[in-house]
Image 1 (cartoon, rainbow, N blue to C red):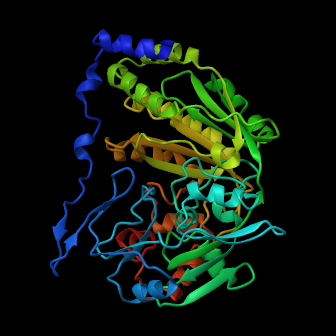
Image 2: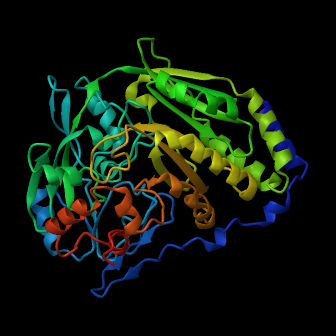
Length: 469
């Protein structure tokens, strides 16, 4: 038994249950999923919920068209609002509808590829976890990936999903063309040269313009990556953050609340022989941090001492493998999330404020906080638009505990930095605030209105977000 397991089990054996163990941390406030029921026509309606269980819906129709012809007909005639759904990995209320829930599960796979241009066209319903073997089989690789790979390509680009790296953009920044079916049944092929305004809007669209069926991506040659993970004193790691972000192909850190150290992860191309990643330890570690919170949130100094001792046994980890086996990680502990993006110069000042707020006001928090950097791009609703490099801070709350008070206290910290939220994650910005932070906001709304004048793709959340409620 290592020191971490010994300390945690010793606390349990000693009955070290503090006052916080009597607190449900808002679990009783969490929304409850609807029960199955019967619709007006006698058919059974089945509830939907997202991955974390926070967002729910009881749609009147569940659609899974077989081809574009059927999709076009369904978009014109199915009960609205019509909302596309992939893996349900968005924490914002992008999907919930009382109308029609539309799956792209029949729009998957590798459709075409070009070895000379290193491009590949994929069905928009393809899961990121399935893309790796497909592209590797034709000698290609995604330039970057997020650390969760269960999302569909369409869902990932619609919400500006990203990985990390100063020279690496979000997934949508590698899109060179896409195919869109509008609520009027039109099929539009677009790129920077063909229907450029639709392309600029559709690369990050929140699923509000219609349904994307195919995506063409600009890729890189398939390759191996080396992943290095180590623990370092947080203050020291923050001093070196910019240096490490420039030094490594991909770099991020995880701040462990009420611990003096943080986890650093660096990924770089390599020619070293394959040495696969071992068994995932992150999920167990998160639950052990929850145990420390449950027992010791009432005594932060002792909690820090216990976590510092427990993490002394952490040994640096290295793994070498094909790119798609290195980027993603298993995320089995469910959570809700809020992530904001800023100009990279604001990342560390904003984070220091977040850390201070957590350690003085939020002793209930235990989930690691993630810091990343992302290259800018020019998609109209990209949170990285207009920045050479953006910095990102993601805060999480355990899925069974109410995230709203915590997020509401952290979110104002980001506003002086003109922060932009990740579209798939929780935030409370108003249409006026968003219009002030996105120079092409009005242009996007104009394209949306032209493609979907009746608002068939707009659920109540999107109507409010776009100022159309």
